[in-house]
Image (tube, rainbow, N blue to C red; front, side, top):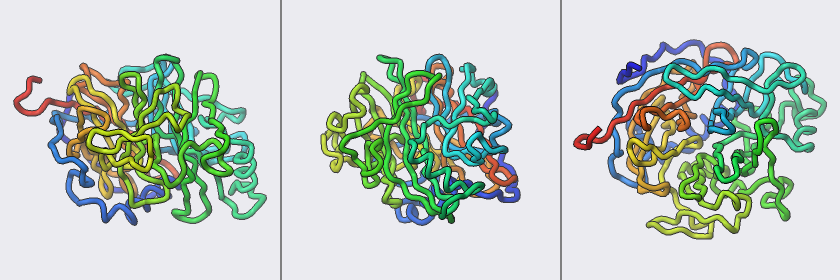
Length: 409
């Protein structure tokens, strides 16, 4: 594989209609993040100040991730190796033709492939289809959510406000090797018609036992969030699930931002035994200076990132690396740390994404199941809008890492 040190960008084309999720993240970035960020290549200022323990040797754009032709566009794309497949979870998904329930917009979708070598791109993606031949959602709606969305469906509206919906947005997914089950984190969002008219209600985690079944959302009694008994965390708490990993038998979960506070993109960290993930009393939270607390209010940011981020161990660097998109730009950022809680380095630009038809890159993250050459080559995706209405693509980039000057490569 030949690497270069930059990605060729394309001249901006006619803007498409932004997806609701595009608009949601963009307004949060523009309106609220400005006071927190500096317009440097390092993105937002960090809670720690060392240089990253790496160099960027080269990058290679490997093109788009193949998708079902019935999918016009979607964002996100968190992935994990689950039951022999690389499984990818996406957010808002626009369909070329309505699904069996009459929807052309679904709040999540998923794909899977047995192709675990990304050197020349990734092929062989499949989707489970409904009776109309449309891709299915990965997260099950409750009967109440399903009925509400059906009666407010913009294409067959029976009740005002037309277009209102409950949306389930997948976040990170991690597999517990002890059980073979996956944990799929997600957020619940209520959307009303009109630009930027979204409200996050909280976050939770679904247990996924088999590719042949949907993940199961939990039920808490008494509920953490009234009327939404599946939510583990409320809108005033960190949005846990932005990234997750298992190390030393413990599950580490980052919550980057707080749904009710767009001014906050701090990535707070919780940890819990995977078997106790649904027991809030079993969680502890990083409280700074090497300490952990059982009180969620003691949680402090390990670093400043973005709503969508990936954190993974890198064997080549012998460090954890965080990947995310910087606001107001196409820059994809990288940080390093010796431990999940840090201390995290300053961010540096890994590469600059290809220009979208409109907006900015906001959902870059790594797919660690594809690490190659002992982790020296990692693979990162991001979505970008394309000219036709409601369309987008997900691009794959190989990043070749090097050790800092003076260290053996």
